[in-house]
Image (cartoon, rainbow, N blue to C red; front, side, top):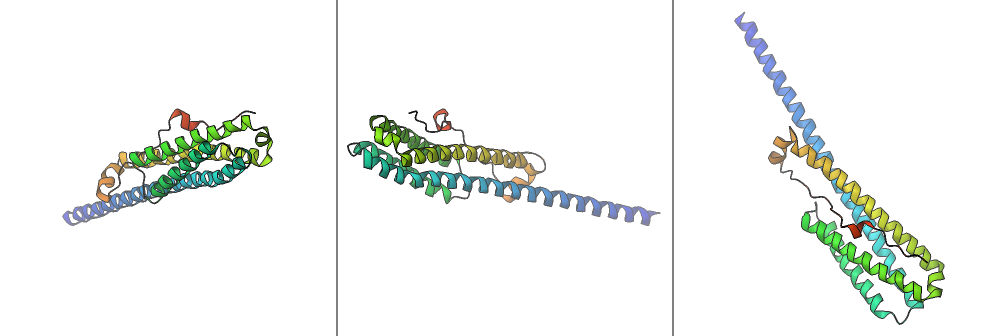
Length: 201
């Protein structure tokens, strides 16, 4: 009888250990997948921001052709693009984003949006520019890019929420410190950063 009780106890302990191991493995894998989704969402933000930056030199060239006396505005947009590109390159190379990275990226993109508004406002003074199909096409593409940036940020925040939830709830709350998983920061967009660049003709 004692032998049977000891055998049942050993089997029970083996089952408990196996179940615990399975829970640990499944939760660890879940956290890894969530962290990977955050990384993919970060890469998407970088891609749409880069697409937007790539459109700006074409816009500057078109405006230059029509508005040769607006050098200050063109210089301002070139500087804003350069600054945004530098920050984007720096942030893109990081495994994860902290509050400072997010603030720098949001601020640089916001400043770029503000500068774009000024270049679109120039069109009011230049009817030929305002009527240019190339200018209008670029304006549409830039507005679309800004919308894509907003969507990419929303997706990133969604993935960060899932990841943070996994490492803040049981058993992730135990696994996270063991394997070095840390909370990730999300974008808190300023109101002006949520509005796409628009100009009405």
